[in-house]
Image (cartoon, rainbow, N blue to C red; front, side):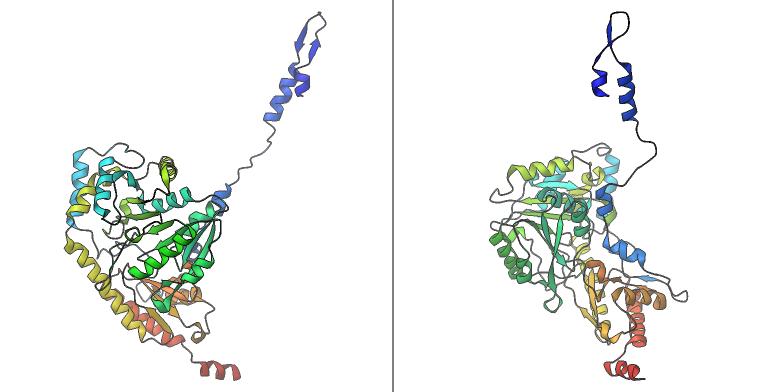
Length: 449
């Protein structure tokens, strides 16, 4: 058809012209679709949230005789017993009343707001300036940008196991391989450093460290953080430090940011307002760029700026309120929140420690507690998913099976519920386990019969 289109043709009058048939042929080629054929993108197909995949497949029918107690949702605002501070609310009201923050902000955030965050988190060991801060739509977007700027399809990242499911969701959708390094429950969920190091190869472009941890509630010591940094330094792997629960640690524990201990490892530290200030719906997070030796250089910084321009993320009103939120929130608010979380954790740990077949691990911070299930003593259930599913059916208590965190035969409890609900939930879990617990001798006798 193309050759015909550009071939001269005699029209009978001694003149040449281009054949219109060729144009018709091209038009046919352009409109060759005879039916609709719309297909989802590869990225959408490859995007999977493990928590949703597991929970959506569970048969969750609560006992109608018992009110539901959900210990599964990592949102401290659900039950209304943990409101944010009045100063935080007033800061938002003032920002709205000012009429200054109703328009678009720069993709990386207002300069003044970035300065405020930089000043709040800057320390002698890890100084920050406004240019080192990008404001994002929650910590989740911060993690998304950090992974995306560091990794290409075919690269791999190291992710804690058990660990926050979003890391895998984001990475796999981008064609990035996820390698899971093991955390050790017998050592309060410290990293198995030898195992982590064994996973590093020439395509490893990022090590994710979550401290304090979701789902474990662990807080790493200074020495352990230094050991992690040593491995990263040895193999020249940058760190994505998920520190959304930073400073949410119980008395007797000390939180230290990874950047404050690093002499050479470049770090993208991700955080936000969601947890410490109890406002997850306000969607303000940040990336703090720590690069003492200019290893990231201009390219990574420019890459983050470009990625931030895809969607203008951080809420402008919250940006307008951030200075007052960070500087005026009273210390008593933080202490009160931590005291409540510690008390509920102690209640839960104490109650479940005496339940045959369960092995809770006492947390040191954040909002979570992990409980091991000795599955051999619960032969009715094949795994933690079936165990927690039946717990809902019989006792109307919903705990998240740790299979959602790639760590079977555990379940996670969120300790933000009111104290009386925490006590009641533990009582019901005890009753459930007493009903289904079997000793090894019982199992043997039942098989013989």
